Amino acid sequence: MQSNEFEFSIIDDAIAQKLERYSGKFVELRYKEYLNAIPWRGNSNYIVTEILEVDKSADHETLPY
Image 1 (cartoon, rainbow, N blue to C red):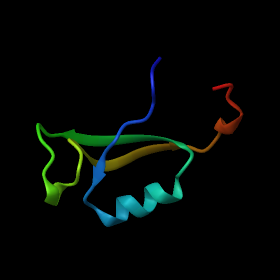
Image 2: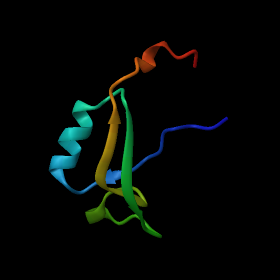
Image 3: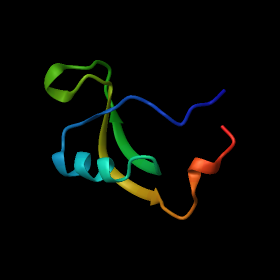
Image 4: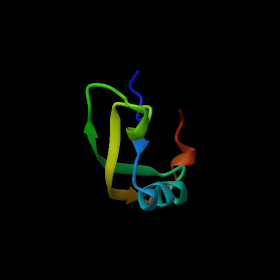
């Protein structure tokens, strides 16, 4: 099975606030991948740098999975 979820960190408060508003929607993100997680950069190897697109058109809660 394929999952559309992954763990990431955010260092920009504005991006974090926008993602909180888009909770439950499909979001396309731009991120950087680092070899190791370090405390001041978050607890993940992935750091979100930009929100590219938010799919607001479909009701994804009705999907069969």
